[in-house]
Length: 98
Image 1 (spheres, rainbow, N blue to C red):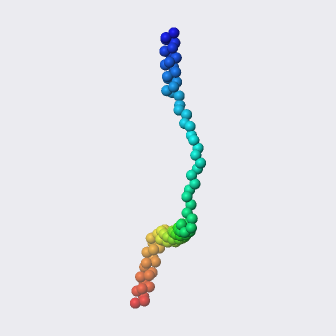
Image 2: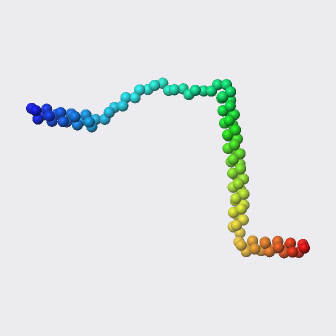
Image 3: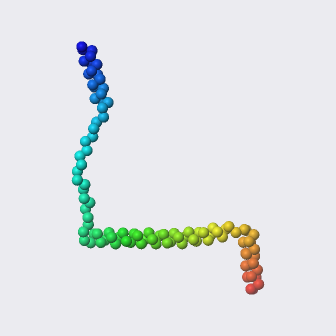
């Protein structure tokens, strides 16, 4: 009888250790975010507008820069022989003008 009792005690303790704890979650009402009233709200609305304008300006400037880089790098796509001929023609024109 003592052996059965000891066996049940060991099994019970093992199950108690292995068993998962249940987490009880309590739900509280959600906290409301404080809202600015008066000049504070107007200030941040104006600030958001300025940020949007700045982002648009930066996009426009980036498009201009991309076009400039395209022109720059596309000019190197030509053959070097063509470039040499153009340089010689320009040099000849300047010599003839003198």
